[in-house]
Length: 219
Image 1 (tube, rainbow, N blue to C red):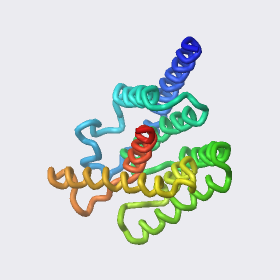
Image 2 (image 1 turned 135 degrees about the vertical axis):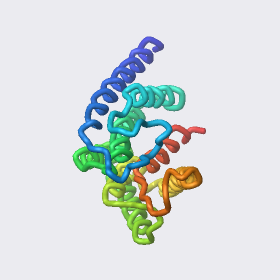
Image 3 (image 1 turned 90 degrees about the vertical axis):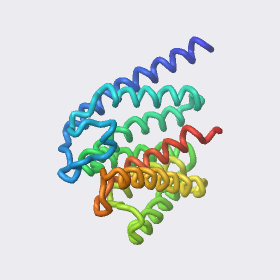
Image 4 (image 1 turned 180 degrees about the vertical axis):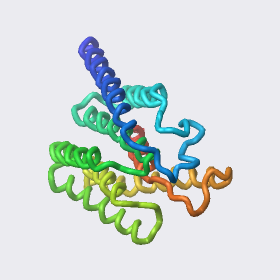
Protein backbone atom coordinates (compact mmCIF):
# COMPACT_ATOMS: atom_id res chain seq x y z
CA UNK A 1 0.00 0.00 0.00
CA UNK A 2 2.82 2.40 0.90
CA UNK A 3 4.55 1.69 -2.43
CA UNK A 4 1.33 2.27 -4.36
CA UNK A 5 0.63 5.55 -2.54
CA UNK A 6 4.20 6.71 -3.18
CA UNK A 7 3.86 5.86 -6.86
CA UNK A 8 0.60 7.79 -7.13
CA UNK A 9 2.18 10.79 -5.38
CA UNK A 10 5.13 10.64 -7.78
CA UNK A 11 2.81 10.55 -10.80
CA UNK A 12 0.87 13.54 -9.47
CA UNK A 13 4.14 15.44 -8.92
CA UNK A 14 5.25 14.66 -12.49
CA UNK A 15 1.85 15.81 -13.78
CA UNK A 16 2.21 18.99 -11.69
CA UNK A 17 5.59 19.81 -13.24
CA UNK A 18 4.45 19.01 -16.79
CA UNK A 19 1.30 21.15 -16.47
CA UNK A 20 3.33 23.98 -14.90
CA UNK A 21 5.94 24.12 -17.66
CA UNK A 22 3.36 23.81 -20.44
CA UNK A 23 1.05 26.45 -18.93
CA UNK A 24 4.02 28.79 -18.33
CA UNK A 25 4.76 28.74 -22.06
CA UNK A 26 1.12 29.70 -22.74
CA UNK A 27 1.30 32.75 -20.46
CA UNK A 28 3.90 34.38 -22.68
CA UNK A 29 1.44 34.43 -25.59
CA UNK A 30 -0.40 37.35 -23.96
CA UNK A 31 0.66 40.98 -23.97
CA UNK A 32 0.86 42.92 -20.74
CA UNK A 33 -2.05 45.33 -20.34
CA UNK A 34 -1.25 49.03 -20.91
CA UNK A 35 -3.26 49.69 -17.73
CA UNK A 36 -0.72 47.75 -15.68
CA UNK A 37 1.73 50.60 -15.23
CA UNK A 38 2.08 49.56 -11.63
CA UNK A 39 0.74 46.08 -12.07
CA UNK A 40 -0.57 43.77 -9.40
CA UNK A 41 1.73 42.06 -6.94
CA UNK A 42 4.59 44.36 -7.95
CA UNK A 43 6.64 43.11 -5.03
CA UNK A 44 6.59 39.55 -6.41
CA UNK A 45 6.36 39.82 -10.19
CA UNK A 46 8.72 41.76 -12.50
CA UNK A 47 7.13 44.58 -14.57
CA UNK A 48 7.05 42.56 -17.80
CA UNK A 49 5.36 39.53 -19.27
CA UNK A 50 8.51 37.51 -18.54
CA UNK A 51 7.00 35.96 -15.46
CA UNK A 52 9.77 34.12 -13.54
CA UNK A 53 9.52 30.41 -14.23
CA UNK A 54 10.93 29.54 -10.81
CA UNK A 55 8.18 31.50 -9.04
CA UNK A 56 5.46 29.98 -11.19
CA UNK A 57 6.66 26.38 -10.88
CA UNK A 58 7.45 26.95 -7.21
CA UNK A 59 3.85 27.94 -6.54
CA UNK A 60 2.67 24.81 -8.35
CA UNK A 61 4.91 22.66 -6.15
CA UNK A 62 3.53 24.47 -3.09
CA UNK A 63 0.02 23.51 -4.22
CA UNK A 64 1.21 19.92 -4.62
CA UNK A 65 2.58 19.88 -1.05
CA UNK A 66 -0.66 21.36 0.30
CA UNK A 67 -2.55 18.69 -1.61
CA UNK A 68 -0.47 15.92 -0.02
CA UNK A 69 -0.93 17.37 3.47
CA UNK A 70 -4.66 18.07 3.33
CA UNK A 71 -6.38 15.80 0.80
CA UNK A 72 -7.02 12.11 0.35
CA UNK A 73 -6.08 10.55 -2.99
CA UNK A 74 -9.45 10.24 -4.73
CA UNK A 75 -10.26 10.77 -8.38
CA UNK A 76 -12.31 13.88 -7.52
CA UNK A 77 -9.60 15.47 -5.36
CA UNK A 78 -6.95 14.82 -7.99
CA UNK A 79 -9.23 16.27 -10.69
CA UNK A 80 -9.82 19.43 -8.64
CA UNK A 81 -6.08 19.75 -8.02
CA UNK A 82 -5.32 19.57 -11.76
CA UNK A 83 -8.03 22.15 -12.41
CA UNK A 84 -6.38 24.41 -9.81
CA UNK A 85 -3.10 24.15 -11.71
CA UNK A 86 -4.79 25.22 -14.96
CA UNK A 87 -6.67 27.99 -13.13
CA UNK A 88 -3.29 29.22 -11.87
CA UNK A 89 -2.25 29.82 -15.47
CA UNK A 90 -5.50 31.61 -16.25
CA UNK A 91 -5.32 34.01 -13.29
CA UNK A 92 -1.67 34.79 -14.07
CA UNK A 93 -2.78 35.79 -17.57
CA UNK A 94 -5.52 37.90 -15.94
CA UNK A 95 -2.96 39.66 -13.73
CA UNK A 96 -0.84 40.66 -16.70
CA UNK A 97 -3.27 41.17 -19.55
CA UNK A 98 -6.58 41.86 -17.73
CA UNK A 99 -8.07 38.99 -19.71
CA UNK A 100 -9.55 35.62 -18.81
CA UNK A 101 -9.16 33.97 -22.24
CA UNK A 102 -12.16 32.00 -23.45
CA UNK A 103 -9.96 29.39 -25.12
CA UNK A 104 -8.86 28.25 -21.66
CA UNK A 105 -11.83 29.20 -19.48
CA UNK A 106 -14.63 27.63 -21.55
CA UNK A 107 -13.02 24.16 -21.84
CA UNK A 108 -12.42 24.25 -18.08
CA UNK A 109 -16.10 25.09 -17.52
CA UNK A 110 -17.00 22.00 -19.57
CA UNK A 111 -14.53 19.87 -17.59
CA UNK A 112 -15.99 21.16 -14.31
CA UNK A 113 -19.48 20.32 -15.59
CA UNK A 114 -18.46 16.72 -16.37
CA UNK A 115 -16.53 16.19 -13.13
CA UNK A 116 -19.25 17.81 -11.03
CA UNK A 117 -21.92 15.71 -12.71
CA UNK A 118 -20.07 12.47 -12.01
CA UNK A 119 -19.49 13.49 -8.39
CA UNK A 120 -22.72 15.27 -7.46
CA UNK A 121 -25.19 14.75 -10.30
CA UNK A 122 -26.21 17.01 -13.17
CA UNK A 123 -28.88 18.97 -11.28
CA UNK A 124 -26.62 19.93 -8.39
CA UNK A 125 -23.73 20.78 -10.72
CA UNK A 126 -25.78 22.99 -13.03
CA UNK A 127 -27.49 24.44 -9.96
CA UNK A 128 -24.12 25.50 -8.57
CA UNK A 129 -23.28 27.21 -11.84
CA UNK A 130 -26.62 29.00 -11.87
CA UNK A 131 -26.14 30.21 -8.29
CA UNK A 132 -22.72 31.65 -9.16
CA UNK A 133 -24.07 33.20 -12.38
CA UNK A 134 -26.94 34.95 -10.59
CA UNK A 135 -24.73 36.03 -7.69
CA UNK A 136 -22.06 37.53 -9.95
CA UNK A 137 -24.71 39.15 -12.12
CA UNK A 138 -26.14 40.89 -9.05
CA UNK A 139 -22.68 41.94 -7.87
CA UNK A 140 -21.89 43.31 -11.32
CA UNK A 141 -25.15 45.27 -11.51
CA UNK A 142 -24.56 46.73 -8.04
CA UNK A 143 -20.98 47.55 -9.06
CA UNK A 144 -19.58 45.95 -5.92
CA UNK A 145 -16.53 44.79 -7.86
CA UNK A 146 -14.93 45.11 -11.29
CA UNK A 147 -16.65 41.98 -12.62
CA UNK A 148 -16.70 41.23 -16.32
CA UNK A 149 -17.92 38.39 -18.50
CA UNK A 150 -14.63 36.54 -18.03
CA UNK A 151 -14.97 36.62 -14.24
CA UNK A 152 -18.50 35.28 -14.52
CA UNK A 153 -17.40 32.36 -16.71
CA UNK A 154 -14.43 31.73 -14.43
CA UNK A 155 -16.85 31.53 -11.50
CA UNK A 156 -18.88 28.85 -13.30
CA UNK A 157 -15.94 26.47 -12.87
CA UNK A 158 -16.10 26.87 -9.10
CA UNK A 159 -19.89 26.71 -9.01
CA UNK A 160 -19.90 23.46 -10.95
CA UNK A 161 -17.32 21.79 -8.72
CA UNK A 162 -18.95 22.83 -5.43
CA UNK A 163 -22.56 22.39 -6.55
CA UNK A 164 -25.86 23.86 -5.41
CA UNK A 165 -26.01 21.46 -2.48
CA UNK A 166 -23.47 23.71 -0.79
CA UNK A 167 -24.83 27.20 -1.47
CA UNK A 168 -23.43 28.40 1.86
CA UNK A 169 -19.96 27.33 0.72
CA UNK A 170 -20.39 29.15 -2.60
CA UNK A 171 -21.30 32.29 -0.66
CA UNK A 172 -18.33 31.72 1.64
CA UNK A 173 -15.93 31.48 -1.32
CA UNK A 174 -17.25 34.77 -2.71
CA UNK A 175 -16.96 36.40 0.73
CA UNK A 176 -13.36 35.19 1.05
CA UNK A 177 -12.70 36.66 -2.39
CA UNK A 178 -13.95 40.06 -1.22
CA UNK A 179 -11.86 39.83 1.95
CA UNK A 180 -8.69 39.14 -0.06
CA UNK A 181 -9.43 41.87 -2.59
CA UNK A 182 -10.31 44.32 0.21
CA UNK A 183 -7.03 43.68 2.00
CA UNK A 184 -5.15 44.05 -1.26
CA UNK A 185 -6.88 47.34 -2.11
CA UNK A 186 -6.27 48.87 1.33
CA UNK A 187 -2.57 47.99 1.26
CA UNK A 188 -2.05 49.18 -2.31
CA UNK A 189 -4.06 52.39 -1.89
CA UNK A 190 -2.17 53.26 1.30
CA UNK A 191 1.16 52.75 -0.48
CA UNK A 192 0.13 54.64 -3.59
CA UNK A 193 0.42 51.66 -5.96
CA UNK A 194 -3.19 52.14 -7.07
CA UNK A 195 -5.70 54.98 -7.24
CA UNK A 196 -9.45 54.81 -6.63
CA UNK A 197 -10.00 54.99 -10.39
CA UNK A 198 -7.95 51.86 -11.13
CA UNK A 199 -9.63 48.57 -11.91
CA UNK A 200 -8.20 45.31 -10.67
CA UNK A 201 -8.77 41.83 -12.08
CA UNK A 202 -11.02 39.80 -9.79
CA UNK A 203 -10.01 36.41 -11.18
CA UNK A 204 -6.97 36.04 -8.86
CA UNK A 205 -9.04 36.77 -5.77
CA UNK A 206 -11.79 34.37 -6.81
CA UNK A 207 -9.09 31.76 -7.31
CA UNK A 208 -7.64 32.47 -3.85
CA UNK A 209 -11.11 32.13 -2.33
CA UNK A 210 -11.61 28.74 -3.97
CA UNK A 211 -8.07 27.70 -3.06
CA UNK A 212 -8.70 28.56 0.60
CA UNK A 213 -11.88 26.48 0.61
CA UNK A 214 -10.25 23.46 -1.09
CA UNK A 215 -7.31 23.23 1.28
CA UNK A 216 -9.09 24.24 4.50
CA UNK A 217 -12.38 22.36 4.17
CA UNK A 218 -11.15 19.43 6.29
CA UNK A 219 -10.11 21.63 9.22
